[in-house]
Image 1 (tube, rainbow, N blue to C red):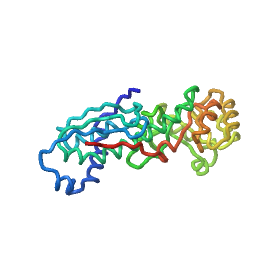
Image 2: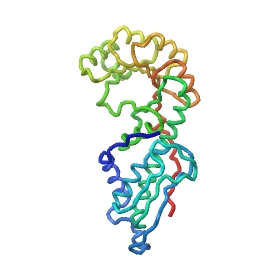
Image 3: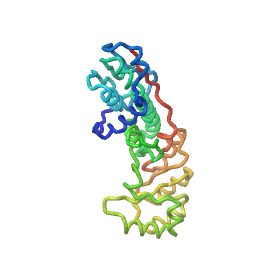
Image 4: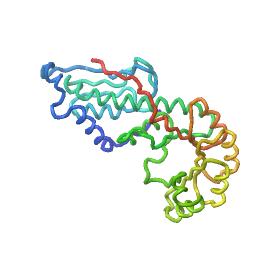
Length: 282
């Protein structure tokens, strides 16, 4: 699947900080000690597991930030499927430079490929339906942008990126503000015409109150049974976007999609993912 990449400059600070963390003030002291100056090699970044790749753009930036003269060829792009043994990228040039960029490249690409792979597994469970798989804000601090991009590489969609880009009313907001009617009317008075309002409900009685007020754009059905979600979709009847969340395990995703919800948000896509095994071989 082809994806339009993010501009490199949006990712450069992450790469610079990550390389600084790894190299510190002295650089790669092992390579400096044992590899003669001018030694060149050709390296391959290989997939050791099957999955969906994400993070090749970051891997390229990692190597090129260390040494812009390295010759890099990306053979498998972000969003593409791989099998164990496939070569994702080749890197040619100074051996010490390649080794300095290796760990940051592999750490980021391995984690992001794990996210893309898990997302693709969830998306496969809903491909027959209108329901889309989306992520949450349960991301690794400092990595939200690239982790959400990895969800897209796996065929999922992005939920809000932060507290600033949508009004999402949860149970604690309702408790602090007084009532469902109070929070919704205040939110509508505050929101611009470009900002959507979503409200979380735990039961059908709360949903009925939301529908009675009538100003929300989206409703999140939190930890509801499949039967209640089916009823909720019927109650909404197209008046709002309906999202399901809470305890969304892979084995029940197809059943949740069958209730007719528009989105299923899955925190595990970013907070409980296993790294896809990638390696660099000279």
